[in-house]
Image 1 (cartoon, each protein chain N blue to C red):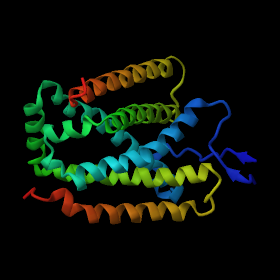
Image 2 (cartoon, rainbow over the protein chains, first blue to last red; image 1 turned 180 degrees about the horizontal axis):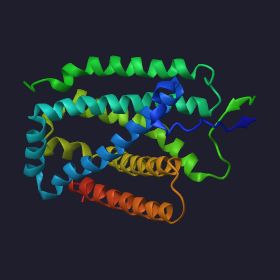
Image 3 (cartoon, rainbow over the protein chains, first blue to last red; image 1 turned 180 degrees about the vertical axis):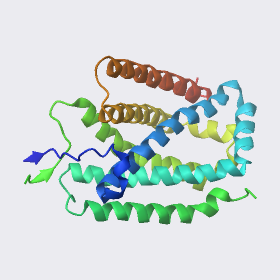
Image 4 (spheres, rainbow over the protein chains, first blue to last red; image 1 turned 60 degrees about the vertical axis):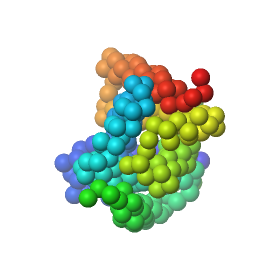
Length: 130
Length: 121
């Protein structure tokens, strides 16, 4: 038998000092979700240069990738995407009835694993940027 | 105490689709990052390389499905987040249709771009 859970007014960000791990996970999942959907629209807009021809497409991507700020933003995008994926897996397991008791620890694991993957990816993402 | 916790609501097809698209996106988003940042570096992307990948029917179909599922998952996620914030009534209906139109426009433009990237047609 399943039961819905009243998480309380987590939208009241003014009481963030009282937030538990699960509430931070909820906020981070929402934040990363907003960033990813915003990026999706931006990504298609940039890729739309392909409709203007191959040269315009290649030059646009080359131009953007030559900017250090874009490379740094890409690392940020990776961090956001990896956290959203790992926390999403955590949420899917909880919805399947697995791991609710350790949902705080799985949130911390998501954060640590995200950090490790992002740090390990920095050399690849910044290669040739300087 | 419930035997287990679930956010499932019976008859809620958006709830189910959000999770089914999540499962698909976990794999495809990770694949997308791996292929276009680690196997091929983003700074070395060219139209010729993109065209070679997109002209493979399986890759093209995967990317179009990626576009459709990511758009649904994202737009439906925004809708859910706004409902969580207390969106109701006429505003809810207006937001719903704005998101439907924005999502449909993104899919149409994304497919136009995907076709422009191929030599299939």
